[in-house]
Length: 432
Image 1 (spheres, rainbow, N blue to C red):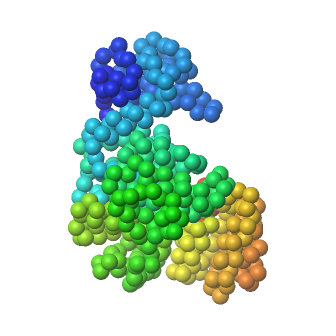
Image 2: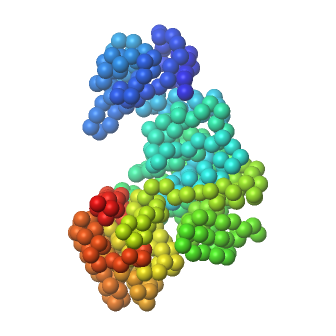
Image 3: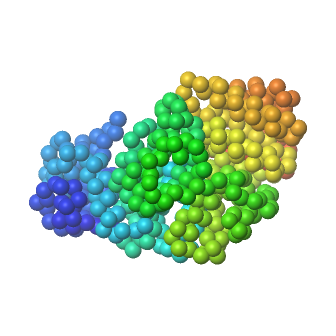
């Protein structure tokens, strides 16, 4: 996406002596001849130190806030300049913007919304999990100029982050999937998490679509149209491995994935599609085309063992929901559970809570559990109280060796943990 010098001047408020039309680059390793370099800063790096490299690589000029350079354009803050350029593009091309946030399920929901809306509109979305303010800018500036719908995933690790993205994204529709305990170690309470998620509502233009959740209702100050979604509004007609069929508001929908929480995620996509004037047939086609992305209910078969990798992230709510969905539907189930991160001073109690929940619900299921990591050991301690088979390992390599030596072909293994556990190593070790 190119901007004229006049547009960049208007967007950033900076004075441009250099005239022309430029793409914006934030990486000197991939910068192209004629790009305009915008250096970003982090805790351990300062992109302004590489302005010289950018110019040598062919950059037409550089933004800077501290260190003047040749062909430099002074701004107060380079990240703010990046956000203002993204907002300028958002307003210039004016796609319908869908903002998506939540403690869990936001990436899956974003992908489902994308699958649905792509049936009717030229749609662009946040790539992978690039859901911070920099990812927002990258998403906007990588969309085609004739994009009709832009889907922006908004993550957060503390107060103010979602509000900042929402300020520059100016969503027409906001989606809040839930407000659970993810990042409770940083925010201190579930109420604070709900407050942080509800920051998205400050700049919503039209409609809020959210989980039917008391905390969200309490902390949202949005006065426009609000649509509440809940799995309680769904009648499940059929559910088995890799398939769900359900009735929602007198219409029947299908998904090529199982799990009540995935069905609930799909409701946000249904409501968004309806809000944008799509027909039910278009919405149904889009939902049926949805496929899970990497580490989110991703399936693979190795040496006769079926593996479901849902280890992109984990918190108590998502772990209980996903493991329940797995145990309800699969035969010869083996569950591998790892540490859940960022749960604060009560992290041990949260892990015990998961163990008690699963133990009470599935004591007669005949499932085998493998726990990995110091905190997951507390899950196993609780499971053992319900006479469930539990083995524990400190690392992924020992876990892989145990699986190869002890788990029969035809079994299905479910992997769930926080990203820091790197459970993809288990899959790679089993392959090799």
